[in-house]
Image (cartoon, rainbow, N blue to C red):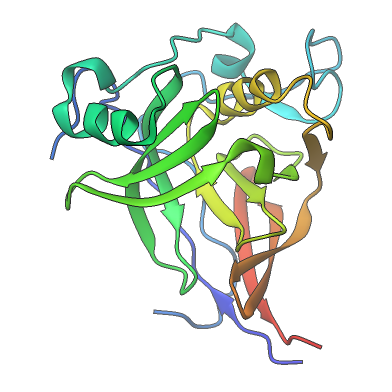
Length: 226
């Protein structure tokens, strides 16, 4: 089995208000997957947390506060984002924010994530380009660790999967659950500290979440296709 490890460190932008602005190798211990300067970053067992994920995982105090706004990039004031939605005939924005997209090769790309009542859009804000549109009906499940990291994966059987990181992961998951209620197959949310995802059409990877000296880190390994 061909396996390798990549160092993975994520810094998610903190200036989420207003309009948008403009090498692999073995590691001794995983890098911290957390944001510098984040407030409310203490870990807490959510044994009595109300809502979808009660008692299932560690949560940030900020996430427990449930301060949900929805549109953090000002879609209605951005001509390019508005044009993308109009072209697709999609007008109801449920969520919009900057995220980190992990590419098939393991690189980190800042993108804007839009969620409507029909689809998920990933937009390259630097190049003003729509990178991907994923129909909500195509998403089978969401995978997330049991820790308070920012990573989550959208599992899409008919396409390649999508690994991302966001400080508003909990809000994204809740929005997707609400948006897909009443569908033929309900969206499944799986909490595991190790799961596989298809990083590309012919690339399967495994991500493992570990706790080292009080910090949450990740290891990503490429798996040989049988």
